[in-house]
Image (cartoon, rainbow, N blue to C red; front, side, top):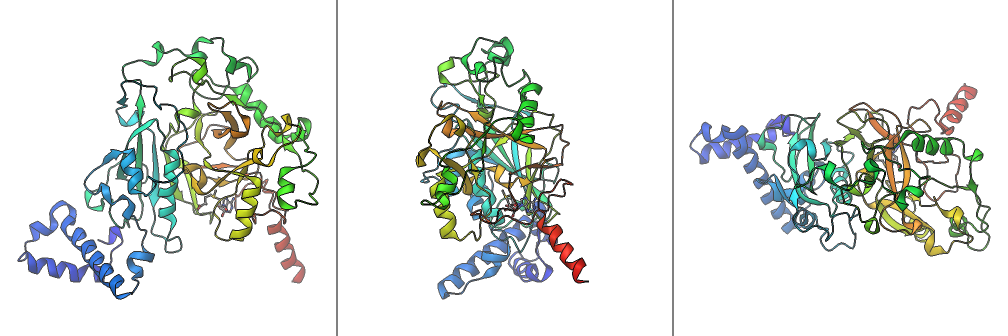
Length: 475
Ligand SMILES: C[S@@+](CC[C@H](N)C(=O)[O-])C[C@H]1O[C@@H](n2cnc3c(N)ncnc32)[C@H](O)[C@@H]1O
């Protein structure tokens, strides 16, 4: 029982009741790793909670201290279910949020679910009993919705060891509270696939170098290799533009929407926006198949990711459970699309408190416009809706991921997708990080910057240094 976070004192009265009721039938109590005992324990807790709620008491045992998971109670004895059922159980059925990656919608006559765990990407959550982060797990489930796409048909949930291998004993099934210290919830996204077809018989723009308008946007060749990774030249160009923006194009708006949102009447001067390289993925007008090599981001996550509690005081973080070669697509950064004015108002009303994410400005193509209307100056806010990417922590300059603008379906470049790719080979279990581009010295930014604990020797957060210096001088 202690392995699932229950103390002897809590369990003993339940055990005594069970012994009495079963006339000391230990075989019955011990069966399936004490499943009856665990089940009875939670049932009694629920009954107590219902009783307390009736009396108006709040029992923090179930409501606060333990990670709550009633949303997934459905799966008690069921390892997998349809995505719609899962969404409904999480209360997202009526939500206006539309899942991204619309790749399979209405285009396939007969669909089949891809089989075998190696073909099925997974996202995992390390379950940690952390009394300071009571809503942590709730938040995590909320954000998985961003990874569930229309191309995903079934979702399966299982409890595995920290490295995603061994399945754990069934008594810690997904129920009201999981309090297994170092286990992970593995969420497998089973995709609709071209199961009747092998990849080589598909129309494949990248492999066959088919003449395709999408390639023109990346300088005449495709941004992807036949293995589905970024080609070196494209990645190098993107990295060098980011590292030395002054050598490339920085675009300065005459009337910057970011500054306009802060001060409508007297906007400050624009700080400059990098004109970025875009990937244009094949889309409905190309006529190629969905298995085309120039459709990578739109197919969604394709590697095994884990949300885990970092030891560096940064909260939750993300790592992969497999080695990722340079140029691998990890996931996209999903969030609500807001205008900068809406974001600014949202931040002002929230007072910057309780925020978990740093919004991303979708300004990669602002340079091609003379004047941007308010409704075209967009950003992504993952505070309320997002996907696994909103657990990826920041690292100054030498992060192992970079973000690249990708056009998926819509040719309107205000609504591009932001995809995260590895910039070097990344080992399994290594934390995945990206540079949020925060200016730690900007005290006027609507979202207050956190104290950076990235550990990089290039860390830009000089405030930490200043604080240390003051101590030295005082001494
Ligand atoms: C997008 S979230 C990342 C996930 C977050 N760690 C969590 O537990 O939800 C960004 C927040 O994570 C924390 N964070 C990210 N990178 C950090 C860093 N280098 N140092 C300290 N905190 C960091 C900050 O609180 C930041 O506001």
